[in-house]
Image (cartoon, rainbow, N blue to C red; front, side, top):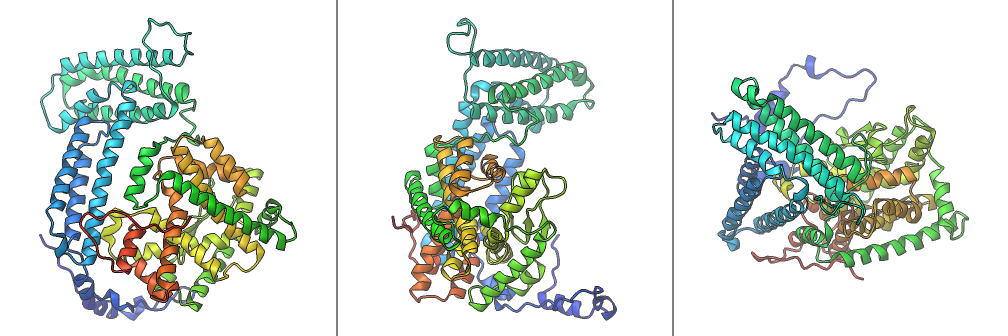
Length: 606
Protein backbone atom coordinates (compact mmCIF):
# COMPACT_ATOMS: atom_id res chain seq x y z
CA UNK A 1 0.00 0.00 0.00
CA UNK A 2 1.48 3.37 -1.00
CA UNK A 3 1.70 6.15 1.57
CA UNK A 4 0.30 9.55 0.61
CA UNK A 5 2.70 12.43 1.30
CA UNK A 6 1.78 16.11 1.40
CA UNK A 7 3.96 18.47 -0.62
CA UNK A 8 6.18 20.78 1.43
CA UNK A 9 4.12 23.88 0.51
CA UNK A 10 0.94 22.19 1.73
CA UNK A 11 2.59 21.24 5.02
CA UNK A 12 3.72 24.84 5.58
CA UNK A 13 0.20 26.11 4.75
CA UNK A 14 -1.33 23.58 7.16
CA UNK A 15 0.99 24.68 9.97
CA UNK A 16 0.13 28.32 9.29
CA UNK A 17 -3.58 27.64 9.83
CA UNK A 18 -3.16 26.19 13.32
CA UNK A 19 -4.98 28.20 15.98
CA UNK A 20 -2.93 31.04 17.51
CA UNK A 21 -4.13 29.87 20.91
CA UNK A 22 -1.89 26.81 20.43
CA UNK A 23 1.08 28.22 18.54
CA UNK A 24 1.29 31.46 20.48
CA UNK A 25 2.23 29.93 23.83
CA UNK A 26 5.54 31.20 25.21
CA UNK A 27 7.56 29.79 28.09
CA UNK A 28 7.53 32.11 31.09
CA UNK A 29 10.84 33.95 31.31
CA UNK A 30 12.24 32.28 28.16
CA UNK A 31 13.25 33.98 24.95
CA UNK A 32 11.02 32.87 22.08
CA UNK A 33 13.07 31.43 19.17
CA UNK A 34 12.52 32.87 15.71
CA UNK A 35 9.85 31.14 13.58
CA UNK A 36 11.12 28.20 11.57
CA UNK A 37 11.75 28.83 7.88
CA UNK A 38 13.72 27.28 5.03
CA UNK A 39 16.08 30.00 3.83
CA UNK A 40 18.58 27.96 1.90
CA UNK A 41 17.56 27.49 -1.73
CA UNK A 42 19.40 24.15 -1.71
CA UNK A 43 16.45 22.83 0.30
CA UNK A 44 14.14 23.20 -2.72
CA UNK A 45 12.64 19.67 -3.18
CA UNK A 46 12.84 19.89 -6.98
CA UNK A 47 16.55 20.74 -6.87
CA UNK A 48 17.23 18.01 -4.34
CA UNK A 49 15.50 15.42 -6.54
CA UNK A 50 17.37 16.54 -9.66
CA UNK A 51 20.71 16.27 -7.86
CA UNK A 52 20.07 12.76 -6.55
CA UNK A 53 22.50 10.08 -7.69
CA UNK A 54 21.33 7.20 -9.86
CA UNK A 55 23.51 4.96 -7.71
CA UNK A 56 21.51 5.75 -4.59
CA UNK A 57 18.84 3.05 -5.19
CA UNK A 58 21.63 0.61 -6.05
CA UNK A 59 23.38 1.32 -2.75
CA UNK A 60 20.06 1.13 -0.87
CA UNK A 61 19.34 -2.28 -2.42
CA UNK A 62 22.79 -3.53 -1.51
CA UNK A 63 22.32 -2.49 2.12
CA UNK A 64 18.84 -4.02 2.31
CA UNK A 65 20.10 -7.36 0.99
CA UNK A 66 23.22 -7.34 3.15
CA UNK A 67 21.36 -6.64 6.39
CA UNK A 68 18.83 -9.36 5.55
CA UNK A 69 21.66 -11.88 5.18
CA UNK A 70 23.32 -10.68 8.39
CA UNK A 71 20.09 -10.98 10.36
CA UNK A 72 19.62 -14.56 9.15
CA UNK A 73 23.23 -15.78 9.39
CA UNK A 74 23.97 -14.36 12.82
CA UNK A 75 26.73 -16.72 14.00
CA UNK A 76 29.84 -14.79 13.02
CA UNK A 77 32.14 -17.77 13.48
CA UNK A 78 30.07 -19.92 11.11
CA UNK A 79 31.75 -21.08 7.87
CA UNK A 80 28.31 -21.00 6.23
CA UNK A 81 27.97 -17.30 7.03
CA UNK A 82 31.43 -16.61 5.66
CA UNK A 83 30.66 -18.48 2.43
CA UNK A 84 27.33 -16.66 2.00
CA UNK A 85 28.99 -13.27 2.40
CA UNK A 86 31.80 -14.20 0.03
CA UNK A 87 29.22 -15.07 -2.60
CA UNK A 88 27.22 -11.93 -1.90
CA UNK A 89 30.22 -9.62 -2.26
CA UNK A 90 31.31 -11.44 -5.40
CA UNK A 91 27.91 -10.94 -7.05
CA UNK A 92 27.92 -7.25 -6.28
CA UNK A 93 31.42 -6.86 -7.65
CA UNK A 94 30.12 -8.35 -10.91
CA UNK A 95 27.18 -5.92 -10.91
CA UNK A 96 29.52 -2.96 -10.50
CA UNK A 97 31.92 -4.27 -13.13
CA UNK A 98 29.03 -4.37 -15.62
CA UNK A 99 28.07 -0.71 -15.16
CA UNK A 100 28.85 1.90 -17.82
CA UNK A 101 31.11 4.17 -15.80
CA UNK A 102 31.58 6.77 -18.53
CA UNK A 103 27.82 7.39 -18.77
CA UNK A 104 27.67 8.56 -15.14
CA UNK A 105 27.85 12.15 -13.92
CA UNK A 106 30.96 12.97 -11.91
CA UNK A 107 29.10 12.80 -8.57
CA UNK A 108 27.78 9.38 -9.63
CA UNK A 109 31.29 8.29 -10.62
CA UNK A 110 32.37 9.26 -7.12
CA UNK A 111 29.58 7.06 -5.73
CA UNK A 112 30.71 4.21 -7.99
CA UNK A 113 34.32 4.46 -6.79
CA UNK A 114 33.22 4.70 -3.16
CA UNK A 115 30.93 1.69 -3.55
CA UNK A 116 33.56 -0.41 -5.31
CA UNK A 117 36.17 0.55 -2.70
CA UNK A 118 33.74 -0.34 0.10
CA UNK A 119 33.01 -3.82 -1.25
CA UNK A 120 36.70 -4.52 -1.89
CA UNK A 121 37.34 -3.59 1.74
CA UNK A 122 34.55 -5.88 2.94
CA UNK A 123 36.11 -8.75 0.99
CA UNK A 124 39.51 -8.10 2.59
CA UNK A 125 37.94 -7.77 6.03
CA UNK A 126 36.08 -11.05 5.61
CA UNK A 127 39.39 -12.71 4.78
CA UNK A 128 41.13 -11.12 7.78
CA UNK A 129 38.28 -12.16 10.10
CA UNK A 130 38.57 -15.64 8.68
CA UNK A 131 42.26 -15.69 9.54
CA UNK A 132 41.48 -14.47 13.05
CA UNK A 133 38.98 -17.31 13.48
CA UNK A 134 41.51 -19.81 12.15
CA UNK A 135 44.03 -18.50 14.67
CA UNK A 136 41.72 -19.37 17.56
CA UNK A 137 40.17 -22.49 16.01
CA UNK A 138 41.87 -24.76 18.55
CA UNK A 139 40.21 -22.79 21.36
CA UNK A 140 36.66 -23.03 19.97
CA UNK A 141 36.28 -26.49 18.34
CA UNK A 142 32.61 -26.52 19.41
CA UNK A 143 31.82 -23.50 17.23
CA UNK A 144 30.81 -25.41 14.11
CA UNK A 145 28.38 -27.74 15.90
CA UNK A 146 26.58 -24.90 17.71
CA UNK A 147 26.35 -22.88 14.49
CA UNK A 148 24.88 -25.90 12.68
CA UNK A 149 22.19 -26.28 15.35
CA UNK A 150 21.08 -22.66 14.87
CA UNK A 151 21.25 -22.78 11.06
CA UNK A 152 19.26 -26.03 10.99
CA UNK A 153 16.62 -24.44 13.23
CA UNK A 154 16.26 -21.48 10.89
CA UNK A 155 15.86 -23.86 7.94
CA UNK A 156 13.06 -25.48 10.01
CA UNK A 157 14.52 -28.95 9.57
CA UNK A 158 13.24 -31.91 11.57
CA UNK A 159 15.22 -32.88 14.65
CA UNK A 160 15.96 -36.14 16.44
CA UNK A 161 15.84 -35.24 20.18
CA UNK A 162 17.57 -38.44 21.31
CA UNK A 163 20.40 -38.00 18.83
CA UNK A 164 20.85 -34.39 19.87
CA UNK A 165 21.06 -35.43 23.54
CA UNK A 166 23.95 -37.76 22.73
CA UNK A 167 25.68 -34.98 20.76
CA UNK A 168 25.30 -32.50 23.61
CA UNK A 169 26.68 -35.06 26.04
CA UNK A 170 29.75 -35.52 23.82
CA UNK A 171 30.05 -31.75 23.47
CA UNK A 172 30.17 -31.39 27.24
CA UNK A 173 33.03 -33.89 27.44
CA UNK A 174 34.83 -32.08 24.61
CA UNK A 175 34.71 -28.76 26.47
CA UNK A 176 36.09 -30.35 29.65
CA UNK A 177 38.98 -31.93 27.74
CA UNK A 178 39.59 -28.66 25.90
CA UNK A 179 39.90 -26.68 29.13
CA UNK A 180 42.34 -29.25 30.49
CA UNK A 181 44.49 -28.94 27.35
CA UNK A 182 44.59 -25.14 27.62
CA UNK A 183 45.47 -25.43 31.34
CA UNK A 184 48.37 -27.70 30.40
CA UNK A 185 49.46 -25.17 27.79
CA UNK A 186 49.78 -22.51 30.48
CA UNK A 187 52.57 -24.46 32.19
CA UNK A 188 56.18 -23.48 31.35
CA UNK A 189 57.96 -25.49 28.68
CA UNK A 190 59.37 -28.69 30.20
CA UNK A 191 57.07 -28.71 33.22
CA UNK A 192 54.01 -30.11 31.47
CA UNK A 193 53.52 -33.84 31.01
CA UNK A 194 54.48 -34.43 27.34
CA UNK A 195 51.89 -37.20 27.16
CA UNK A 196 49.06 -34.75 27.81
CA UNK A 197 47.63 -32.63 24.97
CA UNK A 198 48.53 -28.97 25.38
CA UNK A 199 47.15 -25.88 23.64
CA UNK A 200 49.27 -22.72 23.83
CA UNK A 201 47.93 -19.34 22.83
CA UNK A 202 48.41 -15.57 23.15
CA UNK A 203 46.35 -13.34 25.43
CA UNK A 204 44.65 -11.36 22.62
CA UNK A 205 43.67 -14.62 20.89
CA UNK A 206 42.34 -16.06 24.16
CA UNK A 207 40.34 -12.89 24.78
CA UNK A 208 38.89 -13.16 21.28
CA UNK A 209 37.95 -16.78 22.04
CA UNK A 210 36.35 -15.63 25.30
CA UNK A 211 34.08 -13.25 23.36
CA UNK A 212 33.21 -15.88 20.74
CA UNK A 213 32.49 -18.50 23.42
CA UNK A 214 30.04 -16.16 25.14
CA UNK A 215 28.37 -15.41 21.81
CA UNK A 216 28.07 -19.11 21.03
CA UNK A 217 26.60 -19.72 24.47
CA UNK A 218 23.89 -17.16 23.64
CA UNK A 219 23.34 -18.86 20.27
CA UNK A 220 22.91 -22.25 21.93
CA UNK A 221 20.43 -20.76 24.41
CA UNK A 222 18.40 -19.21 21.60
CA UNK A 223 18.33 -22.59 19.82
CA UNK A 224 17.34 -24.48 23.00
CA UNK A 225 14.61 -21.98 23.94
CA UNK A 226 13.02 -22.39 20.51
CA UNK A 227 12.21 -26.07 21.21
CA UNK A 228 12.14 -26.23 25.00
CA UNK A 229 8.60 -26.63 26.33
CA UNK A 230 7.12 -26.50 22.83
CA UNK A 231 8.44 -29.95 21.93
CA UNK A 232 7.92 -32.24 24.99
CA UNK A 233 10.17 -34.99 23.60
CA UNK A 234 12.99 -32.50 23.01
CA UNK A 235 12.71 -31.21 26.58
CA UNK A 236 12.62 -34.73 28.04
CA UNK A 237 15.84 -35.68 26.26
CA UNK A 238 17.81 -32.44 26.40
CA UNK A 239 16.92 -30.32 29.43
CA UNK A 240 19.70 -31.66 31.64
CA UNK A 241 22.31 -32.14 28.92
CA UNK A 242 21.76 -28.58 27.70
CA UNK A 243 22.16 -27.19 31.23
CA UNK A 244 25.42 -29.13 31.60
CA UNK A 245 26.80 -27.76 28.30
CA UNK A 246 25.70 -24.23 29.16
CA UNK A 247 27.50 -24.41 32.50
CA UNK A 248 30.62 -25.84 30.85
CA UNK A 249 30.67 -23.02 28.29
CA UNK A 250 30.30 -20.46 31.04
CA UNK A 251 33.10 -22.07 33.07
CA UNK A 252 35.34 -22.29 30.01
CA UNK A 253 34.76 -18.64 29.07
CA UNK A 254 35.55 -17.57 32.64
CA UNK A 255 38.69 -19.73 32.58
CA UNK A 256 39.88 -18.12 29.33
CA UNK A 257 39.33 -14.62 30.64
CA UNK A 258 40.71 -15.03 34.15
CA UNK A 259 43.42 -17.69 33.81
CA UNK A 260 44.70 -17.13 30.26
CA UNK A 261 44.04 -13.43 29.68
CA UNK A 262 44.53 -12.61 33.35
CA UNK A 263 41.52 -10.34 33.84
CA UNK A 264 38.47 -10.91 36.03
CA UNK A 265 35.23 -11.40 34.12
CA UNK A 266 33.66 -8.67 36.23
CA UNK A 267 36.46 -6.22 35.40
CA UNK A 268 35.21 -4.29 32.38
CA UNK A 269 37.81 -1.51 32.59
CA UNK A 270 40.81 -3.67 31.68
CA UNK A 271 42.73 -2.79 28.51
CA UNK A 272 43.51 -5.80 26.34
CA UNK A 273 43.04 -4.96 22.67
CA UNK A 274 43.61 -7.14 19.62
CA UNK A 275 46.47 -6.05 17.31
CA UNK A 276 45.60 -6.49 13.63
CA UNK A 277 49.19 -6.48 12.32
CA UNK A 278 50.74 -4.72 9.35
CA UNK A 279 48.53 -6.45 6.76
CA UNK A 280 45.44 -5.33 8.61
CA UNK A 281 46.69 -1.75 8.74
CA UNK A 282 47.52 -1.77 5.03
CA UNK A 283 43.99 -2.99 4.25
CA UNK A 284 42.49 -0.17 6.31
CA UNK A 285 44.77 2.43 4.73
CA UNK A 286 43.78 1.28 1.25
CA UNK A 287 40.10 1.60 2.15
CA UNK A 288 40.61 5.10 3.58
CA UNK A 289 42.51 6.11 0.41
CA UNK A 290 45.69 6.98 2.30
CA UNK A 291 48.69 6.33 -0.02
CA UNK A 292 51.22 5.90 2.80
CA UNK A 293 52.36 2.83 4.71
CA UNK A 294 52.40 2.56 8.54
CA UNK A 295 56.07 3.50 8.79
CA UNK A 296 55.57 6.67 6.73
CA UNK A 297 52.58 7.64 8.86
CA UNK A 298 54.64 7.23 12.03
CA UNK A 299 57.20 9.58 10.45
CA UNK A 300 54.42 12.14 9.89
CA UNK A 301 53.52 11.93 13.58
CA UNK A 302 57.13 12.41 14.65
CA UNK A 303 57.53 15.51 12.46
CA UNK A 304 54.28 17.09 13.66
CA UNK A 305 55.11 16.23 17.26
CA UNK A 306 58.46 18.03 16.96
CA UNK A 307 56.65 21.17 15.71
CA UNK A 308 54.24 20.99 18.66
CA UNK A 309 57.05 20.67 21.17
CA UNK A 310 58.90 23.67 19.69
CA UNK A 311 55.74 25.81 19.81
CA UNK A 312 54.98 24.63 23.33
CA UNK A 313 58.38 25.89 24.48
CA UNK A 314 57.69 29.29 22.87
CA UNK A 315 54.45 29.62 24.82
CA UNK A 316 56.18 28.38 27.97
CA UNK A 317 58.78 31.14 27.68
CA UNK A 318 56.02 33.76 27.35
CA UNK A 319 54.60 32.55 30.66
CA UNK A 320 58.00 32.77 32.35
CA UNK A 321 58.75 29.03 32.59
CA UNK A 322 61.58 28.95 30.06
CA UNK A 323 61.77 25.71 28.07
CA UNK A 324 60.14 23.73 30.88
CA UNK A 325 56.82 23.36 29.05
CA UNK A 326 55.56 20.82 31.58
CA UNK A 327 55.56 23.52 34.28
CA UNK A 328 53.68 25.81 31.89
CA UNK A 329 51.20 23.00 31.25
CA UNK A 330 50.68 22.53 34.99
CA UNK A 331 50.04 26.25 35.32
CA UNK A 332 47.36 26.08 32.61
CA UNK A 333 45.73 22.93 34.02
CA UNK A 334 45.27 24.56 37.40
CA UNK A 335 43.20 27.41 35.95
CA UNK A 336 40.03 25.29 36.03
CA UNK A 337 36.60 26.68 36.84
CA UNK A 338 34.88 25.85 40.11
CA UNK A 339 32.28 23.03 40.30
CA UNK A 340 28.97 24.00 38.71
CA UNK A 341 30.51 26.56 36.34
CA UNK A 342 31.55 24.25 33.49
CA UNK A 343 28.24 24.44 31.54
CA UNK A 344 28.45 28.24 31.62
CA UNK A 345 32.01 28.06 30.28
CA UNK A 346 31.03 25.68 27.48
CA UNK A 347 28.17 27.93 26.40
CA UNK A 348 30.47 30.96 26.34
CA UNK A 349 33.07 29.10 24.27
CA UNK A 350 30.42 27.89 21.81
CA UNK A 351 29.14 31.44 21.31
CA UNK A 352 32.70 32.70 20.94
CA UNK A 353 33.40 30.19 18.16
CA UNK A 354 30.18 31.06 16.30
CA UNK A 355 30.98 34.76 16.48
CA UNK A 356 34.46 34.13 15.05
CA UNK A 357 33.06 32.01 12.20
CA UNK A 358 30.51 34.66 11.29
CA UNK A 359 32.91 37.60 11.57
CA UNK A 360 35.41 35.94 9.23
CA UNK A 361 32.80 34.50 6.83
CA UNK A 362 34.24 31.01 7.22
CA UNK A 363 31.28 28.63 6.94
CA UNK A 364 27.48 28.60 6.89
CA UNK A 365 25.89 27.59 10.20
CA UNK A 366 22.12 27.27 9.56
CA UNK A 367 19.75 28.98 11.98
CA UNK A 368 18.07 25.69 12.93
CA UNK A 369 21.45 24.23 13.92
CA UNK A 370 22.20 27.31 16.03
CA UNK A 371 18.84 27.08 17.77
CA UNK A 372 18.82 23.37 18.56
CA UNK A 373 22.31 22.54 19.85
CA UNK A 374 22.29 21.60 23.51
CA UNK A 375 24.39 20.24 26.33
CA UNK A 376 24.44 17.10 28.49
CA UNK A 377 26.80 15.99 31.23
CA UNK A 378 28.78 12.74 31.05
CA UNK A 379 28.26 10.39 33.99
CA UNK A 380 31.25 9.36 36.14
CA UNK A 381 31.14 5.93 34.50
CA UNK A 382 31.10 7.41 31.00
CA UNK A 383 34.10 9.52 31.94
CA UNK A 384 36.11 6.33 32.52
CA UNK A 385 36.08 5.95 28.72
CA UNK A 386 35.51 9.55 27.59
CA UNK A 387 37.30 11.87 30.03
CA UNK A 388 36.87 14.92 27.79
CA UNK A 389 34.01 16.24 25.64
CA UNK A 390 31.96 14.43 22.98
CA UNK A 391 30.07 16.20 20.24
CA UNK A 392 27.34 16.14 17.64
CA UNK A 393 23.89 17.68 17.81
CA UNK A 394 24.53 18.06 21.52
CA UNK A 395 27.82 18.40 23.35
CA UNK A 396 28.54 15.97 26.19
CA UNK A 397 30.62 17.59 28.90
CA UNK A 398 33.06 15.94 31.31
CA UNK A 399 33.36 17.42 34.79
CA UNK A 400 33.46 15.80 38.24
CA UNK A 401 30.48 14.97 40.41
CA UNK A 402 30.17 14.59 44.18
CA UNK A 403 30.44 10.79 43.85
CA UNK A 404 34.02 10.85 42.51
CA UNK A 405 37.14 10.45 44.62
CA UNK A 406 39.19 13.57 45.27
CA UNK A 407 41.89 12.42 42.84
CA UNK A 408 39.33 11.75 40.09
CA UNK A 409 37.71 15.15 40.65
CA UNK A 410 41.01 16.97 40.32
CA UNK A 411 42.03 15.08 37.19
CA UNK A 412 38.70 15.83 35.53
CA UNK A 413 38.81 19.55 36.39
CA UNK A 414 42.46 19.95 35.42
CA UNK A 415 41.99 18.01 32.18
CA UNK A 416 38.98 20.13 31.17
CA UNK A 417 40.28 23.58 32.08
CA UNK A 418 39.10 26.62 30.03
CA UNK A 419 42.20 26.73 27.83
CA UNK A 420 41.98 23.05 26.89
CA UNK A 421 38.23 23.47 26.43
CA UNK A 422 38.64 26.44 24.07
CA UNK A 423 40.17 23.95 21.62
CA UNK A 424 37.55 21.24 22.19
CA UNK A 425 34.20 23.06 22.21
CA UNK A 426 34.47 24.25 18.59
CA UNK A 427 35.80 20.78 17.69
CA UNK A 428 32.70 19.13 19.14
CA UNK A 429 30.07 21.71 18.11
CA UNK A 430 30.53 24.43 15.49
CA UNK A 431 32.21 24.17 13.04
CA UNK A 432 33.05 20.61 14.12
CA UNK A 433 30.88 17.60 14.86
CA UNK A 434 27.71 19.56 15.56
CA UNK A 435 27.72 21.16 12.12
CA UNK A 436 28.76 17.87 10.52
CA UNK A 437 25.84 16.03 12.11
CA UNK A 438 23.39 18.67 10.92
CA UNK A 439 24.65 18.73 7.32
CA UNK A 440 25.19 15.00 6.79
CA UNK A 441 21.57 14.28 7.69
CA UNK A 442 20.49 16.64 4.91
CA UNK A 443 22.98 16.16 2.06
CA UNK A 444 23.80 12.85 0.35
CA UNK A 445 22.82 10.91 3.46
CA UNK A 446 23.09 7.62 1.54
CA UNK A 447 26.86 8.10 1.60
CA UNK A 448 26.83 7.33 5.33
CA UNK A 449 27.66 3.77 4.24
CA UNK A 450 31.11 5.06 3.28
CA UNK A 451 31.59 7.08 6.47
CA UNK A 452 35.19 7.61 7.51
CA UNK A 453 36.81 9.20 10.58
CA UNK A 454 39.33 10.82 8.23
CA UNK A 455 36.45 13.08 7.14
CA UNK A 456 34.63 13.18 10.49
CA UNK A 457 37.51 13.66 12.91
CA UNK A 458 39.84 15.11 10.30
CA UNK A 459 37.41 17.97 9.62
CA UNK A 460 37.19 18.93 13.29
CA UNK A 461 40.96 18.83 13.75
CA UNK A 462 41.53 20.76 10.52
CA UNK A 463 39.67 23.66 12.11
CA UNK A 464 42.19 23.65 14.94
CA UNK A 465 44.89 24.16 12.29
CA UNK A 466 42.98 26.92 10.53
CA UNK A 467 41.96 28.75 13.71
CA UNK A 468 45.56 28.60 14.91
CA UNK A 469 46.70 30.26 11.67
CA UNK A 470 43.99 32.91 12.11
CA UNK A 471 45.21 33.74 15.65
CA UNK A 472 42.03 32.48 17.36
CA UNK A 473 44.05 31.31 20.40
CA UNK A 474 45.60 34.65 21.37
CA UNK A 475 47.09 34.12 24.82
CA UNK A 476 49.99 31.75 25.58
CA UNK A 477 47.60 29.78 27.83
CA UNK A 478 45.18 29.27 24.94
CA UNK A 479 47.99 28.33 22.59
CA UNK A 480 49.16 25.73 25.11
CA UNK A 481 45.61 24.37 25.16
CA UNK A 482 45.59 24.05 21.38
CA UNK A 483 49.10 22.56 21.32
CA UNK A 484 48.19 20.03 24.00
CA UNK A 485 45.46 18.63 21.77
CA UNK A 486 47.56 18.73 18.61
CA UNK A 487 50.32 16.84 20.45
CA UNK A 488 47.66 14.42 21.65
CA UNK A 489 46.70 13.64 18.03
CA UNK A 490 50.35 13.01 17.14
CA UNK A 491 50.62 10.64 20.09
CA UNK A 492 47.43 8.88 18.99
CA UNK A 493 49.09 7.97 15.70
CA UNK A 494 52.19 6.71 17.46
CA UNK A 495 50.52 4.60 20.12
CA UNK A 496 47.67 3.19 18.00
CA UNK A 497 49.80 2.13 15.04
CA UNK A 498 52.60 0.88 17.28
CA UNK A 499 50.10 -1.19 19.26
CA UNK A 500 48.69 -2.80 16.12
CA UNK A 501 52.23 -3.45 14.88
CA UNK A 502 52.85 -5.11 18.29
CA UNK A 503 55.59 -2.63 19.15
CA UNK A 504 53.85 -1.08 22.18
CA UNK A 505 51.79 -2.48 25.04
CA UNK A 506 48.73 -0.67 26.45
CA UNK A 507 50.81 0.47 29.45
CA UNK A 508 53.47 1.92 27.16
CA UNK A 509 50.70 3.76 25.30
CA UNK A 510 49.53 5.27 28.60
CA UNK A 511 53.09 6.26 29.52
CA UNK A 512 53.52 8.02 26.17
CA UNK A 513 50.42 10.14 26.77
CA UNK A 514 51.52 11.04 30.29
CA UNK A 515 55.20 11.74 29.60
CA UNK A 516 55.21 13.30 26.13
CA UNK A 517 51.78 14.94 25.98
CA UNK A 518 51.23 15.78 29.64
CA UNK A 519 47.98 13.90 30.29
CA UNK A 520 46.62 13.13 33.73
CA UNK A 521 47.17 9.40 34.40
CA UNK A 522 43.46 8.56 34.65
CA UNK A 523 42.68 10.52 31.49
CA UNK A 524 45.50 8.80 29.60
CA UNK A 525 44.26 5.41 30.78
CA UNK A 526 40.72 6.22 29.66
CA UNK A 527 42.02 7.35 26.28
CA UNK A 528 43.90 4.09 25.68
CA UNK A 529 40.98 2.03 27.00
CA UNK A 530 38.66 3.78 24.54
CA UNK A 531 41.09 3.20 21.68
CA UNK A 532 41.36 -0.56 22.11
CA UNK A 533 37.94 -1.51 23.50
CA UNK A 534 36.74 -2.58 20.05
CA UNK A 535 34.27 0.25 19.47
CA UNK A 536 36.59 2.12 17.11
CA UNK A 537 38.41 1.01 13.98
CA UNK A 538 42.19 0.47 14.12
CA UNK A 539 42.90 3.73 12.24
CA UNK A 540 40.37 5.85 14.11
CA UNK A 541 42.91 7.53 16.37
CA UNK A 542 45.30 8.18 13.48
CA UNK A 543 42.46 9.68 11.44
CA UNK A 544 42.33 12.91 13.45
CA UNK A 545 45.77 14.18 12.47
CA UNK A 546 45.93 12.57 9.01
CA UNK A 547 42.45 13.70 8.00
CA UNK A 548 43.18 17.17 9.35
CA UNK A 549 46.36 17.34 7.29
CA UNK A 550 44.41 16.26 4.20
CA UNK A 551 41.88 19.08 4.58
CA UNK A 552 44.68 21.51 5.42
CA UNK A 553 46.53 20.56 2.23
CA UNK A 554 43.33 20.94 0.21
CA UNK A 555 42.73 24.38 1.75
CA UNK A 556 46.18 25.50 0.61
CA UNK A 557 45.49 24.16 -2.87
CA UNK A 558 42.08 25.78 -3.35
CA UNK A 559 41.63 28.67 -0.89
CA UNK A 560 45.14 30.00 -0.35
CA UNK A 561 45.58 29.94 -4.13
CA UNK A 562 42.48 32.13 -4.55
CA UNK A 563 40.44 29.53 -6.45
CA UNK A 564 37.73 29.37 -3.76
CA UNK A 565 36.55 31.47 -0.84
CA UNK A 566 36.58 30.01 2.66
CA UNK A 567 32.79 29.82 3.02
CA UNK A 568 32.30 28.20 -0.41
CA UNK A 569 35.10 25.72 0.26
CA UNK A 570 33.78 24.65 3.66
CA UNK A 571 30.11 24.54 2.64
CA UNK A 572 30.98 22.37 -0.37
CA UNK A 573 32.81 19.85 1.81
CA UNK A 574 29.88 19.51 4.20
CA UNK A 575 27.43 18.90 1.35
CA UNK A 576 29.35 15.83 0.13
CA UNK A 577 28.88 13.85 3.37
CA UNK A 578 31.39 11.57 5.10
CA UNK A 579 33.68 10.30 2.35
CA UNK A 580 37.46 9.91 2.01
CA UNK A 581 39.08 13.33 1.70
CA UNK A 582 40.75 12.33 -1.56
CA UNK A 583 37.28 11.97 -3.07
CA UNK A 584 36.33 15.42 -1.73
CA UNK A 585 39.38 16.76 -3.55
CA UNK A 586 38.33 15.00 -6.76
CA UNK A 587 34.92 16.69 -6.54
CA UNK A 588 36.20 20.19 -5.78
CA UNK A 589 38.94 20.07 -8.44
CA UNK A 590 36.61 18.41 -10.98
CA UNK A 591 39.20 15.67 -11.43
CA UNK A 592 38.74 13.28 -14.33
CA UNK A 593 38.02 9.83 -12.93
CA UNK A 594 38.41 6.29 -14.21
CA UNK A 595 36.55 3.10 -13.37
CA UNK A 596 39.64 1.52 -11.79
CA UNK A 597 40.63 4.64 -9.83
CA UNK A 598 43.41 4.11 -7.29
CA UNK A 599 44.49 6.42 -4.50
CA UNK A 600 47.42 8.65 -5.45
CA UNK A 601 47.16 12.00 -3.64
CA UNK A 602 50.36 12.64 -1.66
CA UNK A 603 49.03 15.31 0.65
CA UNK A 604 52.01 15.55 3.02
CA UNK A 605 55.50 16.90 2.41
CA UNK A 606 58.15 15.24 4.53
